[in-house]
Amino acid sequence: MTDSAVAFLSHLGITALSPGMVFMWAVSFGLIYLAIARRFEPLLLLPIGFGILVANLPLTGLMEPGEGLIWRFYHYGIQWEVIPPVIFLGLGALTDFGPMLARPSLIFLGAGAQVGVYVTFFAARALGFTLPEAATVGIIGGADGPTTIYLATRLAPHLLGSCAVAAYSYMALVPIIQPPVMRLLTTEAERRITMKKSRKVPKREKILFPIVATLVTILIVPASAPLMAMFMLGNLFRESGVVERLAGAAQNELMNIVTIFLGLSVGATMKAETFLQAKVIFIFVLGLVAFAVSTASGVLFAKCMNLFLKDKINPLLGAAGVSAVPMAARVVHQVGSEANRKNYLLMYAMGPNIAGVIGTILAAGIFLSLLQ
Amino acid sequence: MAEELLAPMVGKILKIKVKPGDAVREDDEIMVMESMKLETGIHAPCDGVVKEIKVAEGDRVEEDDLLAIIE
Image (cartoon, rainbow over all chains, first blue to last red; front, side):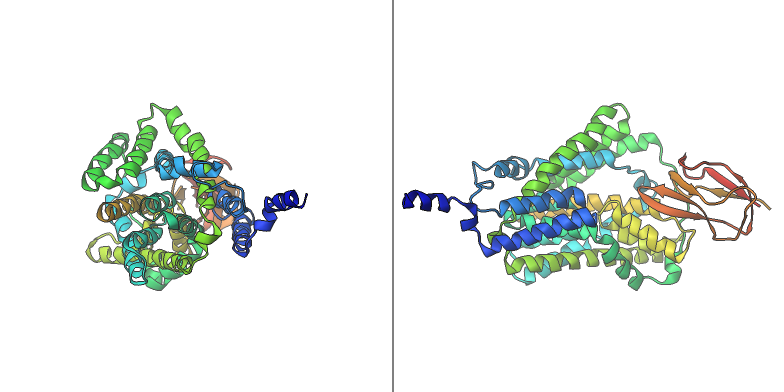
């Protein structure tokens, strides 16, 4: 009788609870609160927050390798590297490369804003992270969720959860992180600069772009192929105009479905024993540094370009080179219109913004080919 | 002299804050438009009187579409 009572009690979840788990609940509730009440990236942070909660309930076996339900989502979706490329298919179908093609010189701003990725990489290395870990932390500065998840899976799976949460939280915080850096590095007069009208991009060019971009980028950085190929395929669906159903499925149903599995399983990787380490604090600090440095380098890069350009560009556009689409472009627009009400930078900012996505994929590809 | 107010970018007209005959000053907000989920004010190009409004709330506009004439 007492034996079976003891056996029953030992199967009660509550007896196996640890303080670390309860702490993780607080993290989970925090994210769920931010997602619901403050609308911080709710599509990702809500399932991630819930994933953290259930992964930190004792004796559930949800993340038990080979058996657990969420482990299977994680294994077949993320470890098999299926979901991030599928997300990129949808992003490709959602992306209009028009603003970038209208003014190809702005592509360089998308490259200029990747500096934060590399600066943070070296900073993380200096702080004692291993090379693969440092690359994963650095890529947070690219401000691209699926790329961060993809790179973390390949290089440092134990950091996946914290890097993903850092990336998505900072993307939500773009409107707070970026403007002070942008104002610090530009003068009022520079922010007032209005842009010369862009040319209209013919349809044929938009159709050819994903094909040419696939050839060029993958021939240079083959390791970028999984993300790049899917991104460009999605865009070809969109621009070809003949497969509206596929373009629609890629950007709506398919992307929504995999987002559920992505968020839940990324959250579930954040168990108390792996998350509660000093390293995680560094990840959040370095991630923030990466964001700020990327913003700064983009703006400074734009100012350098102005030394050579006859028609000056507004240096704020450089800040849109971080690939948080379209948040960074919106921030550029808002800071620009504060200085000059008739300054409409949004569409110009979309150019470097989208170029930034490509830049971050390439940066991830370069890390992969050097570190694997 | 009449000045044409053109759409600064593609998007949707959310709100029109003036009607024909209203006097406006340069930089007054005349309309609010939305583009990529971002709301932006559209401001008067000069002092004058609104002569004509060419769009209605909820209309989708392309870049450079005529929105209003002010003289």
